[in-house]
Length: 185
Image 1 (tube, rainbow, N blue to C red):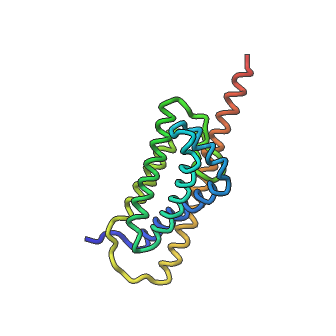
Image 2: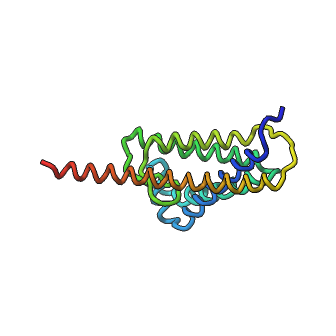
Image 3: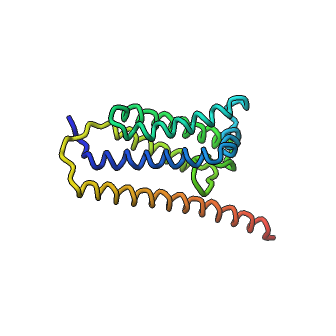
């Protein structure tokens, strides 16, 4: 039984596609840097790093396109869930190892060291991608739906960027506080 509204579904798909395109693009722009980040996780052998970095970027861009194309939406959503699960696992493994000082490699600026919040964030994104698999109620879309879609994507993208900046600022402030505390007698 269809339960989802098409504009909510389109908003989630558009936001996920935008996220994966921007992170994939960021990683592709600095392929050597991304390769170093993948290596810093110490999960894959060095010989696999170039292929793994390229594969991650390629799959991110492919699922971003697929989730927007009706014949491939299920594959796109499933691919996003799998990628996010792999990323969350890699982060969790390194957190368990006590390795919090490496960049998450999530793509985009500013850089973020590993933190449990990144695992939670990926789980939330996995739920969002999975939610696009819910059957959608058929209804005609009107011009106001287009405006709603654009506004929602803009607000969610700005909120995502602001949250990333705040997390980076909090990490920077903790590091400054720790350095300052070390200087005190």
